[in-house]
Length: 548
Image (tube, rainbow, N blue to C red; front, side, top):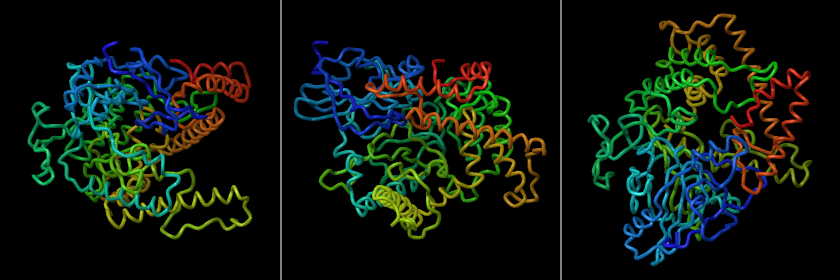
């Protein structure tokens, strides 16, 4: 590769615990480590970490072979530069490879290429105002997007040192940003495309923006969704309807039918939340999951909110954490740009709406809108405990300030967040992942819906659910065992030093430490939860943290 500009890679400083790469989230770059003359493996392969199990499969889902020379030439031509003097591979997120290209005239551009796990080919490349992009693999062997490097600095690098009023100013901007997103009208649920890139679209798929909003002068349309829930964990292999959908009822039914198709196709269930299948533990079955989904389909038409504004199709950024928000380093309250829009889609507002990850915190969320106070025993706490109490109060206050701002400036989002936590909202939300887990919880909610049918739906409409007393008793047993398995999982992950939903990803420098720690904790678990050799063998046969 002598013809190439200087090629380097930048890896993150190793943290003491594994950091989840989900949703393109990456650790703050506190230290860069550059090495010259990267080989082809560094370019094409995932290099930002390792997996303790199923590593070959995980790496294959993130391997992208492409023509780097062609990519560089496209970038040079698009920017009007004479040459590219350096290509730097940046730390990778979960779904794409990212390169920083520096031109001879000082211009810096970002080249982003989706991994195979990003979603369906052709429909995964984002299309903002950029230097160049292609949803085809013909030019360089992969889809790509080349865009101007985001100005500013990641908010996450400054957030902890910012004052309360400055943080509130950021929150106010995010509220305004989300209000603008939900104020735009869309005709269907799905994802947004350039209309001229689609075949055989109907007129009702076309998005009517008007001349004032359509500043690029091209036509957009709604077509199949790029929502990852339709592609993750093998769902991309099943033949199901992926949109677009004209009604909320069609959308909810499509999600349930997708999960049913997965249960008919696969014999194993991905990434359960608990340590199941062991002796005396909850035993997930396809039949139980199918029963829950069939019940959801029976009541799907009654789960939609009466207020159509909170079920309308909207765009929403799903991952507003500190590394996706860029601010002016000289004026940190000024947001310059927001990144990571890949797979953003049009879904119902009450399913999209959530508090920004930036202001989420560990601890209780206060109810109501009263002023949040320090604990009554604050004066009796140690200095360290007092500091923790103050930090918790600050986080809770910012969280509630977001709620207040939303109620004042965009009540439909506030209403959507409230409905999301209602019985109907929770059934709709949780039924999206029953192929994976959660069927005892959903069945319990459906039983409650049956019992409260007259007050929630109306006595004039017959309830389509027919749970017997025996069904209810079995659900209580299942839910208790399910909860026990989830508690076991959380205890085990806590001992390992990992996080909920961990898929085995670790930083390179921590690989050996966590390999040893995982095996140590496994032995301790087997010794403490097995009273006979048969029980130990049963646990070993269903152990989830191993190659499949």
